[in-house]
Image 1 (spheres, rainbow, N blue to C red):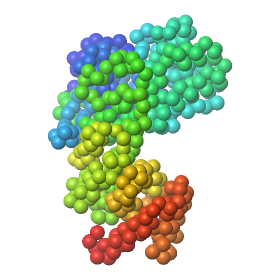
Image 2: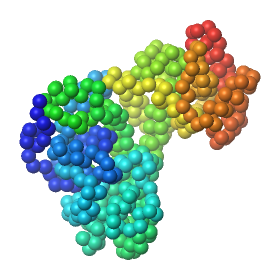
Image 3: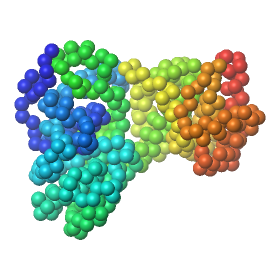
Image 4: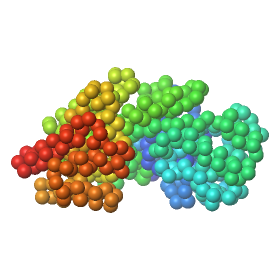
Length: 473
């Protein structure tokens, strides 16, 4: 088995650095860097990535030990076919830690070829901190570090209009691009930087809101020796991911041409408004997960794959998605159904064991955000209640009883939520639905005012409890 480096892998010259990437974790390496690798191969992007480690401790040293090379292992189902593919990623030119050399970090902004900044520094990464007092020393936050580098670039190129960047944050928050821009402006004001710099940021840098979607289990520790033997490389940075990928980028004109994923078959969409795509993901993917968990768990099933392949719960979730969720969304039906079929294939992935109980974390708040809007929209459009989504709500309430078939359910929610359900289940059974649905702290509204919902949920609760007694649910 060979060590992995440019010499042993036969990698010679790399294209110039066009992308500055904050973050070296599994997701970015299996998502963004994988995409750029394909762009270089199939779309003549002719650009490499320089990775900046956003915190003091990270993986940059491991990357440099392998000359920034590693393999992505794609495993799952796509278009009915089982995928088990390995790809050597050669899109990363170099990697550095700004905590080691701040001047060298700022000098990255002097690169005339640089066009993009891409990041994923966790949901809490895009934040402002008054602790960062100036750009003279290395700021603590990611936006602080980025502001310092952009200011250095602005000064180095004397405010040249063509030296602004396209910034594509991938942090999992809504309006991530807009939030990043706002935070940079806070630092400009906090550090009393020139007004002309603020105008340069405003007029010559493009901030894109994004939506990213790919399950990345990460380093396959359980069978890494077997994988390394297959690869014939001692790759200590292998990343495992599912075949499905979706990247929606809300971008101004010109970004699509500069980042030409349209020349490939990658599912990267450049749109004017990301909202319907975010809604699609939350309602179909996340909403299906949240609806499925309590129904399947009470049915004796413990993983997502088992639930989709089971006759009863598989039929339940398919009908839920195609008959009750998809009709409430406004994108073209063909597009919605294609996404829905991909979701079901992802649920069936034989290479990932996705425990239902892990998805059950904070299920009440998840139902409010992911499922309740579909239920209410369905009623508004159809004039009736969606039977499966109502059943899922009833199953959720029974799930929060905390016990099923004489087994304790490991509820994972806030203490106040668990305490509320404990009190509700100690009362009269026929009042359970009305007490839960009237809890405005859960739903931000009184759901007993939704015509017929309380009675329908109570009927489903009674049916589920009866099934428990008969051991046939």
